[in-house]
Image (cartoon, rainbow, N blue to C red; front, side, top):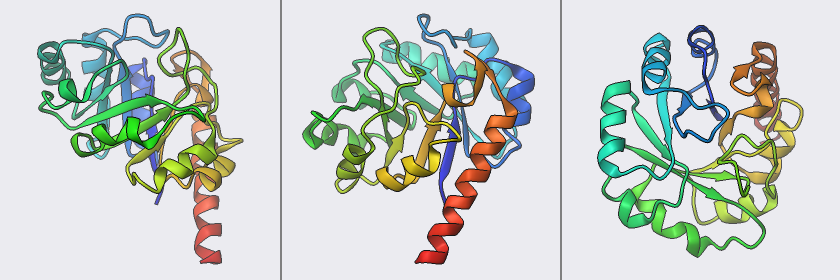
Length: 214
């Protein structure tokens, strides 16, 4: 079954609605330079409004490990997603389950990812951008992700995923975990529930086709 994370949530009411759909986790971003950034107080409100069935993920960028621990405890997040230049040494200091985001291009080698594998619950494959940390709407080379997946089973596919391309993305990347942000929005931070439901329907259709062909 495909694991679905909807990231970049900024609205409490939308968080409550989305968390009751067939998704696995919800993400809030606290990086100040993100157009979807929320305050710690808002992140706490969002997570408090979510169904207990979803995992709450807090996205941080180049924070001190001490601050990350404080943010996690305050907001009630269960997993931290590190989206900056955090080193494996830094990541090993974090006392919460973590996801490490890695910009993916055709030049990326598994050796760049390997040090993070034993200290994370997931490696998020995202698009590279000189200004934005995720939510760019840019897709990544899915065939490269498939190549990397031979060495790492915890890859999370991100970068420009939408209801319209999700089946191709899953087929070509061989990923079983996805992270969707801008592809299910009306505008930055404002999710489109119709698009999210379409995404879920298309994933179910993909899973059914796979089951029938296996």
